[in-house]
Image 1: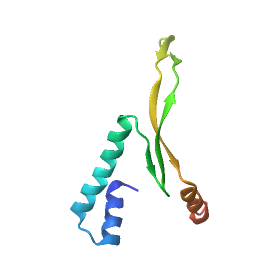
Image 2: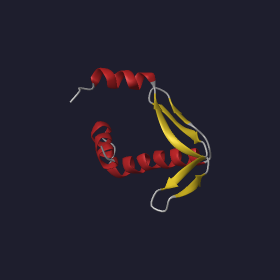
Image 3: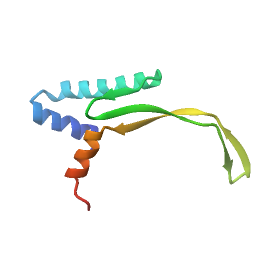
Length: 96
């Protein structure tokens, strides 16, 4: 599902005009990115948590040049769904 499809579903469900819904969806995404960039986790009760995970420093290899590269420690964004979200997906998803 794309952002445009999400916006369209919200428009159909709520009756709010498309431009307004698109602005709100983009604002939510920008706020999540901005706060995570500051090092904050985002908690959405009943949905999940957008959190930061620390990746330790490690040595990587460039196999074409046969050299070692030092990859510094860094933070990566992650998502952990809530128990309610997991349970709803389990019970309502059909295996293909």
